[in-house]
Length: 560
Ligand SMILES: CCCCCCCCCCCCC/C=C/[C@@H](O)[C@H](COP(=O)(O)O)NC(=O)CCCCCCCCCCCCCCC
Ligand SMILES: Nc1ncnc2c1ncn2[C@@H]1O[C@H](COP(=O)(O)OP(=O)(O)O)[C@@H](O)[C@H]1O
Ligand SMILES: [Ca+2]
Image 1 (cartoon, rainbow, N blue to C red):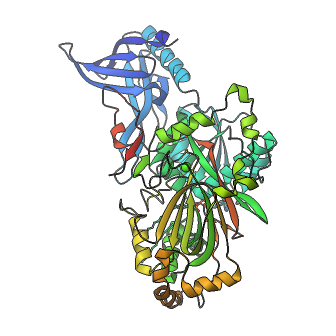
Image 2 (tube, helix red, strand yellow; image 1 turned 90 degrees about the vertical axis):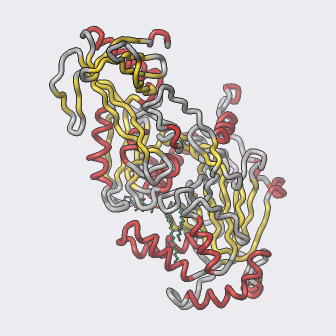
Image 3 (cartoon, protein in one colour; image 1 turned 90 degrees about the horizontal axis):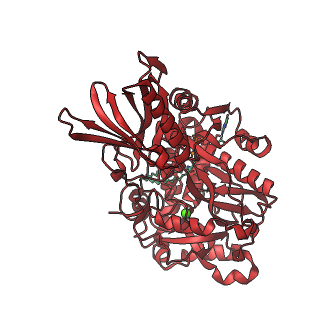
């Protein structure tokens, strides 16, 4: 079949002659000068061709300009440097070709379209799109209609668009309404909107599989529908971490070409409250307090987090707690190994192989129970207790424009583990140093009051009242935190006077931007539970559209 797809001929772009070649995987065109010498080659992977149209076509607005029956236009992904961000911006490239004959033109368009179908099996044909009109700077509708919809139309995607009228409408729709015929679900909004889609899709998939989501021991079934994110929120952390830039056009192009990025998801079980899922930040203490405070200032838009963050920094609160965790296999990777999970990551690929069910399993893998949660596995749990500035768990690096390398720079998107970050009670200057390091390449874990562990599961509970009093007197049980405790006590009560008369003894959990109503939780990481229309962060070396060869086998890169 691939041999059939080879096509080679002379083509013209303007008045320049090119030698164009379509092989199985690439479409290349090389300028040929008057002496028949090859000059610059442009190489586009077939998987990155957005569309092929007869004639000379423009989009935005889409129109056919003066053209002949020998012309055709190819639209494809073009990469540009993104300036400040780690990833690459994608733009729509367009080249209008002229053929020596109409027959050849028809052959080119036919071959290119066939190649597209063969090499991008996950390209969506029908999408369900939810727009949150109030997310971020309230520009969701405009972003979708002016930047994204014309690209979907060009790519022949039909979309059913729902502008939400209330919170949780998208989640409820996915849980209850018929979604047959859709290849994917797109959310236009922020992390909160993504979280709605996540809950809806995971919930529906388990319902259909007859699995009980609340059972901490059940192995959940991966979702069959892909999720696309068009960023239009406040933090846009999931988009930034999986694409590398916050840019609606880049994200729309990843959706169109049917990119596929698996993502780990953490299930958060609470005794008296419904099950929640998290991918970016499950945080107690500092991040919980920021969220609770920021809800009062929603009118500020994305700035509410900086305002509340500064306020909560000044409050300098710490909280007593017992944290238990099950460590992941240290041979596979470590949160301090100074590597980055990039597109094609080899650490994530290793678990992909293990997760793919073999025919002989006949689905039993997804129904199996996890030994972690049986009573005889108690020995695997490690316990720490004391007073913490914050306890955070993230399934991925959780980078965002504020923190380009993220909460845990070496975390992996799809390795089946999460990173648990424990920041013990410390003085205000120490904590500022910790926060400030998130904005640069300095290691935020290289501080005496910070610990990070790669984990498969986490439990959190409050110490009994008597113990809590003890911590308040001795300042926690951890060596690093203990020394600073007395000095801390004075600082705490002084600074907290800024926002509250008495520091509370309990914080709340921030679960991807949602406040959880309970403090005691049990969390478990589910490897590759959902798939996004993304491919992970591409490094600058992938700026290749003008080069001979397109080698996209980047793996894990060391941080420099
Ligand atoms: C001194 C500079 C400190 C910069 C510290 C940056 C740490 C940033 C880590 C960000 C992790 C983001 C994880 C994502 C969470 C989102 O799921 C979730 C929901 O997002 P959505 O509203 O878009 O739906 N977002 C959040 O919960 C917001 C988290 C808040 C992060 C902002 C932190 C700003 C802190 C500023 C402290 C300033 C101290 C100044 C002292 C003088
Ligand atoms: N029409 C709506 N009205 C009010 N809230 C909504 C609506 N649609 C979605 N939401 C909720 O708004 C919250 C924030 O949305 P999000 O798109 O993440 O923006 P932001 O990043 O600014 O927080 C989400 O938790 C979502 O459930
Ligand atoms: Ca992970």
